[in-house]
Image (cartoon, rainbow, N blue to C red):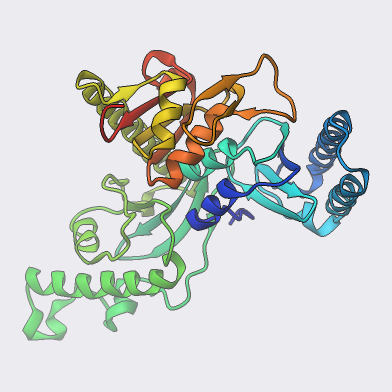
Length: 373
């Protein structure tokens, strides 16, 4: 599997609430290919220099700045850390702490210095991780793999996973029903396949526990329906690959599963857009930044869609959510869209970071509201 460590929702909420005299948010493209990590380390070093220059420009305390620079340098020189990377790296630092998260999704290189962290790129990685598990299931074999957007699939080792249906039920063949007259018909074969499916599900539980990564099933009938009936993993995708995995190469299976994953994300986006249109017709939706800021401050946002590549510098009034727009970004401001997202998430709103073309009206943001504001 890719070396990723995406924060949990409680961790995200802690990062949203974090405040310091200097919060440096640094995002850099990386690669899981060890032989090509040099470019990411160089880019990281350049972004650190930019962050230090911004701190110098606001006459930040020299001793605290030196502490941050020392921590950044230690991370840049850590060969073992850079050997294990994914597709991008988020580093969030203050003079008192430094956190790093390796992400499966690609983000553009950027750095922001403020009194709070920039989390929008990290939220994108959480909303659309671009990865899924694929369960290739047939009577003759079963295997679990993990797929990614632009990397070959990787096998996932699953202890106690039966080799096949025969192994699971302890018979020479699930199709030789004469071994036991009690199940000597088609109904009896279904009983055996259900036993097989249950053992597969039980073996997967420790691997999938606590995750919400989509699980895509590749199987044909009747085994596909039998497995779905006993599955205990909530994130099993409704749609699967209906071609027998025995007929597909690993690459072909991964390609078919990626198509399913793309459809899952597309359906999620379309459902969000449809909800926006419904709410807008009743006065419970907005694409105005000032209105969304006020709604976020009072916990009125139900669902927030934001353009992950648009930044609107400015500041919030902490009492009423009124915004002041800045002409240019600086260490004395922060991204208003990111701040709206943080406040909305803290109040329990659902969140999607998208491309502008996927947002209603191609606005910088679109919010549905729990009630009109």
